Length: 386
Image 1 (tube, rainbow, N blue to C red):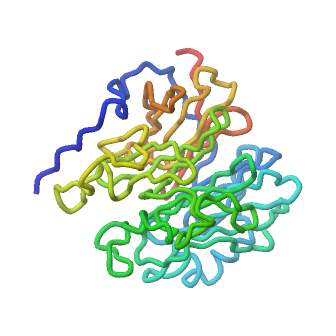
Image 2: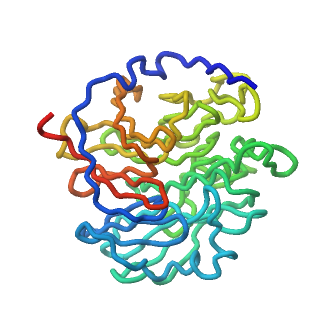
Image 3: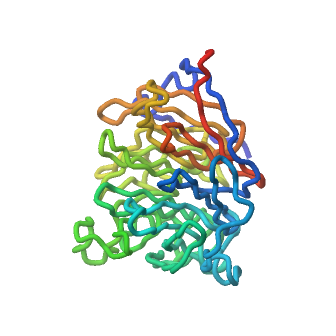
């Protein structure tokens, strides 16, 4: 079977000079090695770094060194593993975020896949960290629907300024995975389902009264936006007061979206994606009424995972740029934006490894986690000699 031709992308969503723009030489400074499939990272107020490993461990980096033993207390995902943590394929212990007032309450938040191959779901839990171990593990949200297989858990966490928490949830998987007799990916358009959504909750797991569907009959009150395939890059932009997300397409059609409350992002009714098993387009159209078009489409796929907005002072020319990690591309895309949110220029920083996460540290540098059996924590610096 031959390869399908790429679905044409409008020029306003495809930078014609992508990857050809000049960029200052970037140094990749290794900080830590030997991490087993790291997924997410978060800084504590004392600049220590917490890093999740997908098999179910939480690691601590202090003064640039990895503590030899995992942090104790991740009981819900490390005890009786087969019954708790579903660490298979894309699943496991995934994202991490500390509470905006961590110094006062010591709460750390996690996402992980829970269950068995035949019935699993994404969960959000929190526990208090005293500097040595976690205590008081609490599950504060779980996807209402269980699914089969090990695909599309989503799982990024992002705090909003009002201290509500956004959680990305994947659509459940590719065909032939089904739910209630139909392809599970169609759940992304079902507002009664958590699958294929961005969820918004309070820090204790309760539902904010101003969520868009709180009063809508038949809709899940935690839903904030819908029509997503599998968001693995999610960040709040304090400079523009916007939420940005990158999500995986199918055989191309990866997207950058400006995500807003109550909006429909189209999947799988509209898409630039193609089926894995045929030359057919997933959707009959690439745009539709009352559906939000992506700001950027990547075909071939970069497999986006990890997204950061740069607001630091170490590299002034990067301020306001988005940085999107790529698993398949093994690189980071630097995206310059105009006031409308359109991408005006794009360049590529080659990492040479699968990029799982990218975050700005308190020192004003960007940090990268690479997805491997022996993954790395890297710091990006601009070489002053170039």
